[in-house]
Image (tube, rainbow, N blue to C red; front, top):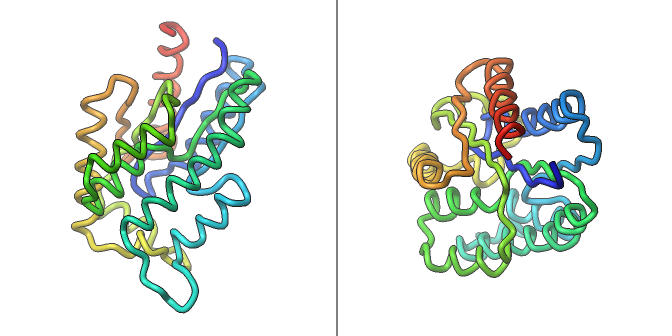
Length: 211
């Protein structure tokens, strides 16, 4: 198979980062895919990493960040990543495995923040500019489990500190989008990491047989 763009989505604590690297290792070992790049959002370029700090922890003097401002920073970071990393890598034949992409904005800012869907779609269309993952794995866990898994972290960011109702909306939006789009595979991430990995490997095997 030629270059491919795979993304991993879900609530914090679902195991996205670990699964991103496991997929990369599986593709190398099982199918000999050597040109693989992993990315994460928000972040991935110097400008995107700077915006990541603002998005996650706020600006100087504890200035409140408006929901629309947050959304615009996320898309600015994404645009930098797309234009300076993802597209050039794909054009060179690399496989890109992304820890979050545009679906996160639909779920977190659209579902969680309840930002107008027309604005979200307009930004998405303009920024991603037809770039869409070939395959997305949505790691589904409950908000309660998500919170219990991340509570050990030394410092929770702005979004991680949102109330349970926020994450209920995020999850509902994820599940709705996953049910509507054929390129999204829902994985029960309440299973052990090994079980989650095996489920994903099986889907990847099927995908290779039915490109």
